[in-house]
Length: 298
Image 1: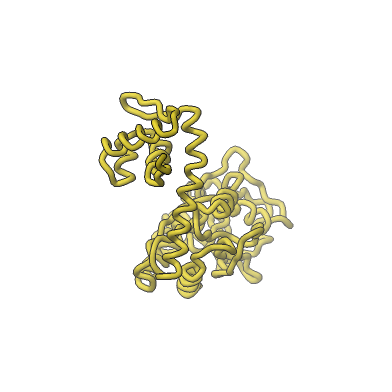
Image 2 (image 1 turned 90 degrees about the horizontal axis):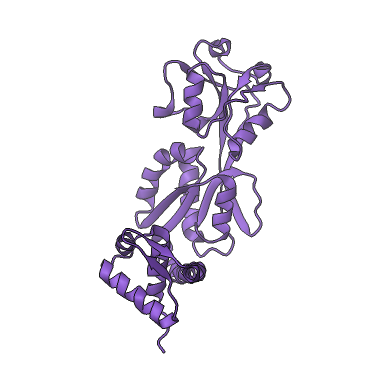
């Protein structure tokens, strides 16, 4: 009997991800009849029904779901084999999957992506946004090559490199008493209403850590899911918040009803770093990306 073909497992994984024969075929760069016929052959070879075919969608059978879980590992291992060979042949070419925190990506990427494209023209960057816990899980599982996040984190099995330090700023409504200050001390936040991100965002923990020695009042009935929502809430007069400096620059700087004030020394900062698997075959490319970010972020 013939061995199972890797491409058939890719087709099956695509069906699992899309739930649709047409979309799966498009993703695999084949025609729908070809994909459907190959999966039918796979079912015949295995002697089991893998897909429940419906008019506008495709569902996995229980057997199909079990097999897909293993097929993913096989496909990922195959991709790693190709990546290892390519990394030795052309270490600064090919696809590199990079994940960033939602509180970093939208503000850092416009600054560094043009420089990365110029410095590393043969490197194809695939960019993702995850919070810290999910990023670490996906990195260790081999779903991404590199993470950019706030340090420190649990580095079991991982390597890290500091990229840059980022100052925090106070975001206040333009008519707030602190808005007239040139600089703000942490003690000046005593008694203020502080707007924070929801649980799971490390920026929330960082802000609470900065204010841990004073009494601030968190707005309990409101927690934002993004920096941009926080920005609008502060502008509306709902309270103050702390923002990383990159989120206060350029097009992100101001609505007219919002001001950003620097802290007096010692300035609260967060350390932004790169992390990757110690066993990664892409360390040359990761190091090159890290150098470009450091050169243009500080």
